[in-house]
Amino acid sequence: MLLELLSDLVKIDDILLIIKNNGATSEIRSDSLSIRQKDKWITIGDNAGPAHLHINSELIKRAEFVEEEKPDKISFSVRFFDESGERILAAFFTKMYDDSKELVAERKKLYDQLKQKFTSKIQF
Image 1 (tube, one colour):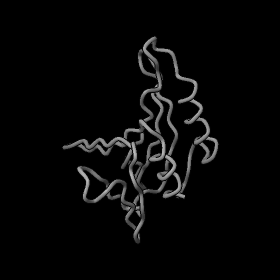
Image 2: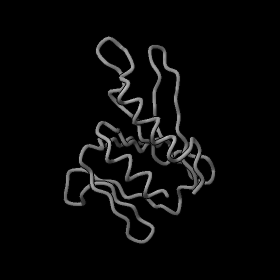
Image 3: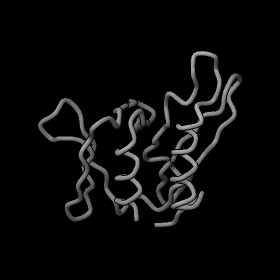
């Protein structure tokens, strides 16, 4: 189910995949990324390309759809956690608001459909 969720996410334009720890942050846009799994490793992007991710599927234990209140908007994401609750990866839906700071209904619908398909909290 993890590969299916990640596959659905990378099919959507303007998803920002973020890996963050105390020393570094890596951000990759989903636009036209390939995805495949070999053994426990899920690779997002092309090994020969400028950027790609290798994700150890055995370490991701749950995912959660998160709508986070910000001062001027709501942030929409899917966050992936290990067994101790540490975030491994986050997929943020970008371009959710137009120039007038109005929520773009089509983008919100994509988020809602994915959330409905997988439920808001997923155990792997």
